[in-house]
Image (cartoon, rainbow, N blue to C red; front, side):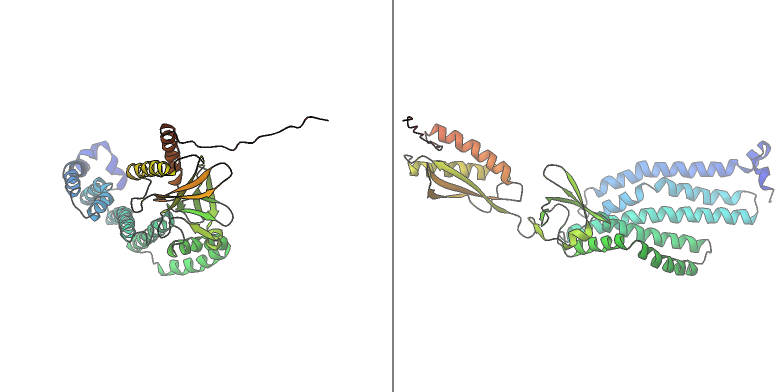
Length: 352
């Protein structure tokens, strides 16, 4: 029996009209909480042992909406028992449909972004997962969800698409510089000029680690922890030296000088012992290449030599040089090998 909508909220009619819908809503929602905290939690623990990472992405995508979906299910069941007109039932049904589409769109967005990141990692960095790409994926999914929601409530999307096309043209003209940066960022990533994590130097003098590539800017972190924001258009046209492109390992050269009266055979033995010790114990030293050294020149006050290591990546040279100098100085002191320093003898003639 249909009754006026305002009479549904009278205290006298509460028990007759509201007890059963509230009970259904409460019961189904409680079951949703139970499902999330017990069944879902056990399922989540079970997939941790799976080698496929996709199941973790699926679990994470639906986790936040489980209770809400059960709540919507409860409302969809309970509202049909209310003695209200078909018009109100229609409005409530459409509202529940929109809420369901919104929640599914949210979960599907997380699912697509998660699989996108997983796929990009499996490509070995061939298609990097950065802010600019994940945002494009999210906007695409949310746009599709919005169009589905509008179609659900019988709003024609054809005129809206036409209006969006005209409006998009006007916006593109107004935001020409912004769109240029966006497409420049896409070009940087797709051409693999730089990727997040690379250490690069630019022809303008900036040097640092690429942290992220966003809609308009590329964020670079200098070794002094200063952050530089570079417009994507400028980075796209810059001459870039990428230290991590291809083989990131590089040669580390450490010059040393010993006194002229040193036993060069002893010097050779001590230098190689220290170098091999570093090669075995330091993670920064590449294990693919053995250390070496060469005597290089007779200089003004010493016989010069250079020790060569292979670092795994740019930035490893500092700890390698630091540790080698400490150890070689200690060993030279123990072996009585002198590290000379320039000596100047100044003869002052007496004034006549």
